[in-house]
Length: 297
Image 1: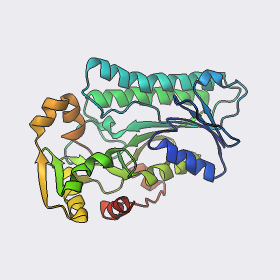
Image 2: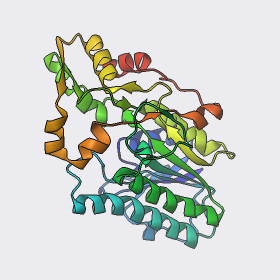
Image 3: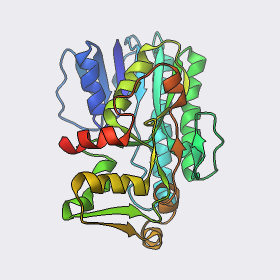
Image 4: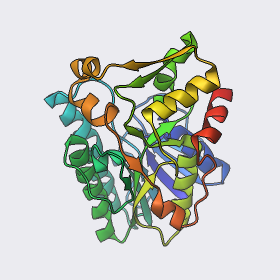
């Protein structure tokens, strides 16, 4: 396949690119970085307009979007989060429309924020959502991706959980205090953390890319989510932390406002029902299996 990837130099994208190349695919990466050297297998472009109409692209993988967890959600920040997702998806569709042949498949990122803050009910892909900013953001993003269907493109929407690995992402923050012998949890610690190892995210993307009967929304989370406190306790046990302490919710609300209430002090107990029903096997289905691997890296 010849695959176009946005966000291909990011936390997930750079590993995905390596996997695609290892499997013999060729890759076109849309990136804002300059100075990256192209070769026979991977080509870096800084604008979709540079791709000609006769370009043969079998698949689009859309991972672009500013981090939702960095800084308070001011009105300007919210608009930037929306624009970084919607505009890129629209530009990809404009490219697909002017290509001689539209891509056969689109994998487009979304997030479990689609479901909004929830309590303890397990959530599969058909679960009802709670209205909030993160839900509205994901709904708009997924709607733009779904418009590819009119071009004859198979669309898979990837509702990503908290992706863990050692060279970036949330794990660096989650284990930051443990190096000082203190494990921390957020607020009451009772909120659910639907995590997933990055290796499983990339493997699931490749699985969906190659299964022609796969379409629609898929939760990309490990089969066994944990509460924030359970994650803290497991990490403390692995690292022999001296003490576990809460980070007070009030302080987090004062510092981060709406972001704290939607992403950090509440959560979702998400199940990857459709992936498992499709026959996908997780390498790290439980935290007990994932944590030693993460800490050994």
